[in-house]
Image (cartoon, rainbow, N blue to C red):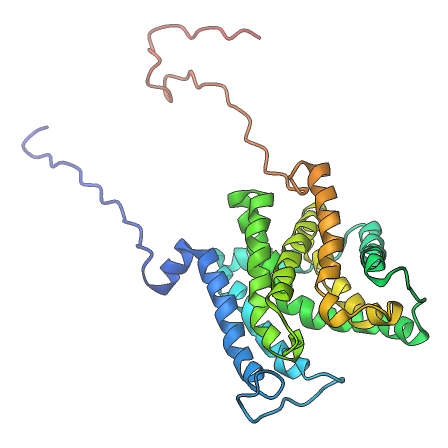
Length: 330
C-alpha cells in the first residue's frame, strides 16, 4: 500500500433488532396466540357467565335468539378470541405472505367429493354407534322435524361455531405445532388447550350450569383431544383444507343439538353429551394412530438433493489452479 492509498472501509448495515410488542410476538408466536385467544374470549364471556344465564351475580339476562341466549352471549366472545388472535399474530410474524397462506387454507373447499360424503355421513354414523350402548339399544328413526332442520342447523353451525374457532385452532396453530413438534405431539398440545378454552362456559347455560361436575369438564377436554386427533388427520390428508376439518367439528355439534335426543329418548344428554363424542372420536383416533403409525397423514417436505462438490478453482479455494481437475467416475 502506497502513502496515498487508504484502507477500504466497508460498512455493513446491521439488522434492526426485534424490539417491542411485535418483536415479542415474533419470538413467541404460539404463546401470544393461545394467551390472546383465551383472554379475549374469557373477558367477552364474563358478563354472560355472571348474568342470570350463569352464576346469577349480575341482574341481567341475555335475550334469546332462535330459541337460545348463546348466540348473543357466547358467539361474540368466540369470534373475538381465536380468529382475532390468529389474525394479529399472523400479520405480525408472516406479513402479507403469511396472511395469504392463512386465507388459502381457510378457503380450500375444492377437495374430493369423497371427503364431503365421508364426513357428512360418517360423523352421524359414528355418534349413533357410540350412543347405542348408553341407550340400551333403544333407537328411533329421526323425525321429520329433525330431517328438515338438520341441514340448516349445520350451515348455521358453520358460519357461527366453525368460522369463529377453526381459523385459529386448525388454520393458525396446527401447522405451526406440527412443524415444530410433529403431528402427534403437536395435536396433543392443541387438543387440551382447545378444550380448556371452553371451560368457563360450563358455568353458564351453554354448559348446563348448575348441573355440572368436574368429571363432565374432564370428559369434555379429553373429547376435545381425541376429536383433534381425527381433525388433524382430515386436515393433513385433504392437503390442509380447513373447511373439511371445520365440517367435521360442526357435524358433531349439529348431531348433538338436533338429532341426538330425538333418536335416543332414553339417554340423558344433559350428562352424557360430552361422553358420546369422546367414545366415538376415541375409537376413530386409535384406528387412525395405528394405521398411520402416529403420523396422522402429515408429510414433512423432502430434503433438498445432495449437490456434487464444486471443483472449480474460481469457487473452491482448496483446488490448486496449477493442477488438473480429478476425473469423477460416471
